[in-house]
Amino acid sequence: MSFRTAIITPALATLLATATGCGGPDCQSTCDKIYGEKPGCGDAEGTPGEEGYLNGLLGPSGNRETMLRQCQEECSTALETPGEVGNYAPNDYTPSTEVVELENDKQAGLWMDCVEENSCMNLESGYCAPIW
Image 1 (cartoon, rainbow, N blue to C red):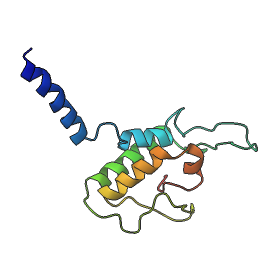
Image 2 (cartoon, helix red, strand yellow):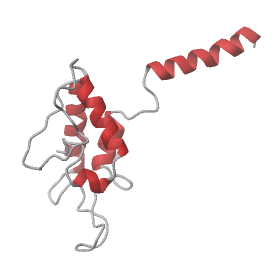
Image 3 (cartoon, rainbow, N blue to C red):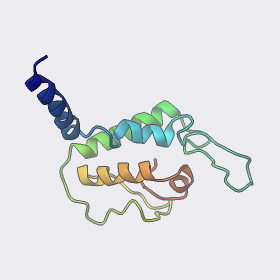
Image 4 (cartoon, rainbow, N blue to C red):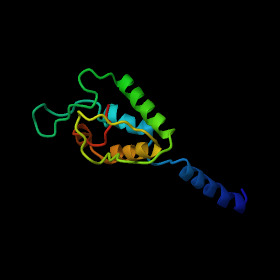
């Protein structure tokens, strides 16, 4: 391998990895965290009634495959739509009665970052909406 190839190949690989967003959250990793099995947030954890108990984001009637599919479809659709953040603030508490939709790529990016940075307890408590 020539000296030029040894220098250019790693530099090109780094540039491509940066341009494609490697390393940050994506729709699949975000939805897996929300609805996946441990260490994801989908299943109940702990003892009911005790501090730290997590109901699990799948809920009692949730179907993991259905919820993962819906989550990934909503996220992917939003990523395909250019737009601005507007009033969307995933780091703010959102009551479960309020419907929140990801409308565009900027909102989806903020949402994925929020889910990645928050605990399952916070997600269950109304942060990083939408959690379907």
